[in-house]
Image 1: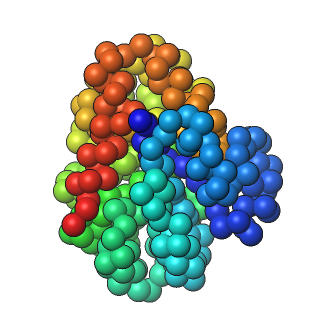
Image 2: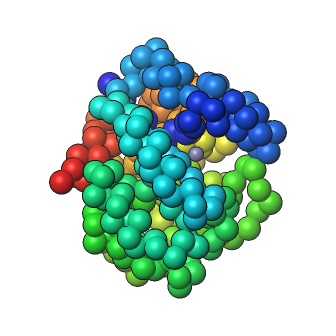
Length: 265
Ligand SMILES: [Zn+2]
């Protein structure tokens, strides 16, 4: 059974307008309708036991509704990551609350949340997350829906892992979307998780294999970025890399399981 470490769903009422808006913004097509129910059906079709759901607070006031919704959809199979906004004035309390409710991590996105990863003001968030044992799934690299800016590039990511080495950081999109040469230069081999979300359609197979096989084998996570990719096709793309079967199993299941269970307190 597979664990999908990078998916997006929305409250039912939000999904109906969020999906078309995001499709237009990124010029992409959603494979699902953005609801929890549709994701669960996709998971059934493609033998996916658990999906990690990444929410993004685009304003500080969204902390509470996202937390409430995350609590309402959390289950054995759906692992929601709440979110908070760097401009919140009570961000450390919010991290504590997320932890107290038993969530294993949070999601941050530098484009939707208007920050640069190397800003001084973020350090307390990273330090507190590390103290609480919360992992952070961070959108890294460019984003298909925005003009390109250096918001979370491999050098900035490396600076963070040097500053807070105990932080469990998942650098999404194989370290930095569409900045993979710099990932090779700065991040491959470091103690950092990389997920494969929205990568294998964009990166030549040989380069993907070279990056994956030179990074620590317990630090690569399968993620589909559903609904922005079909979960079944994303699994097949990983299988089609023809990695060592043990490594494939680690990527599709074991690494995600270990990261999720290491958080359980
Ligand atoms: Zn995503």
